[in-house]
Amino acid sequence: MPLSDLSKRVALGIDIGGTNTKFGVVNHRGEVLEKGKIRTDEYDKVEDFINALSEKVNPLIEKYGGHKNFDGIGVGMPNGNYYKGTAENAPNLPWKGIIPFADLMNAKFDLHCIVTNDANAAALGEMLFGAARGMKNFIMITLGTGVGSGIITNGSLVYGHDGFAGELGHTIVKPGGRKHWSTGSEGSLESYASATGIAITAKKMRAEFPQSLLNLYPESEINSKTVHECALKGDPIAIEVFRYTGQKLGEALANFVMFSSPEAILLFGGVIKSGDFILKPTKLHMERNLFPIFRNKVKLVFSELDEADAAILGASALVWEK
Image (cartoon, rainbow, N blue to C red):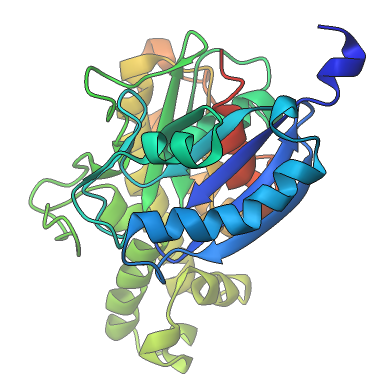
C-alpha cells in the first residue's frame, strides 16, 4: 500500500466500562484524532446502547473518509471474548448473560469488529504505541478499581483455550485471606493491590493508629489518592499501606515472572500515581521471591500511555494486531 494511502487509514477504538464508554478515531501512529463518550449505564438493552453509540460515531466515520478509510473497530470491554466476539456475564455491565457484541456491531456499522477484554486491549496498546514497543514478551498489569492484566508471549496475547486467560488479578496471593467484595474469593491479588484494596487496607490500619493523618479524612474519602497525599506528608501509616500493598503485588509478580519469563512488567492505572511508594516495595518483594535464574532480568516500569487515551488506543490496536 502506498505511504500516502496508509496515512489515511484509521481505526475506531472503543472502551466500554460499567459507567462510561469512550471512543476515538486512531491512526497508525497512535494519534487519537478525535474522541467522545456516552454513558453505558443508561441503556438496559445492548441494542439501544449500540444505536446511541452509532449516532455519535457515524459522523466521525464520515468526517474521516467513510468506511473505505476504516480498517475496523476494536472494542475492549469487561469479560470480552476474543474468540467469540462476545461479552460473557460481565458483572458491571447492564446487559446480562452472553452478548454477541461483535455480531451486533458488525451489523450496525458494516465494519469488522474485534472484541477482547479491556486489560488485553491495554497490553496491545502498550506494545504498539507505548513503553513496550519492540518487546515480544511482557505482562501488563492495570491497577485501578480492580486489577486487570494482559500477557504477551512471543508477540501475541495469551488467550487460552476459551479466550479468558490472563486473569492475574484473581490469582490467590494469601490463601484464606481478605474476602473479595464481588467474587467472594479469599485472598486474591485484586483484593489487596487494587485501588479498592488499598482503601480497605488504609481503613483497617488507620483504625489501629489514631495518630495517623488518615484519620483526618471521613470514611468515604479514604482512597488511594488520599493515602498518597498522607504519604507525601510523611505519615508512616500511609507509607506502610503502600509498602504492604507493594509486598503483596511483588510476591504475585514473582510468580508471574517464573511462569512466563517476561522481559518487562508494565504497571498502569490510577494506583501508579503513588510512584516510588508502590514501586520500590513491589520491586523489592518481586526480586526477593524470584528463583535465582530470573533475578535482575525483568524490568518493572510504568506505562507511557496517556491515561485519558490509553483505553481507546488499546482497543484500536486490536484492529492492527496481526
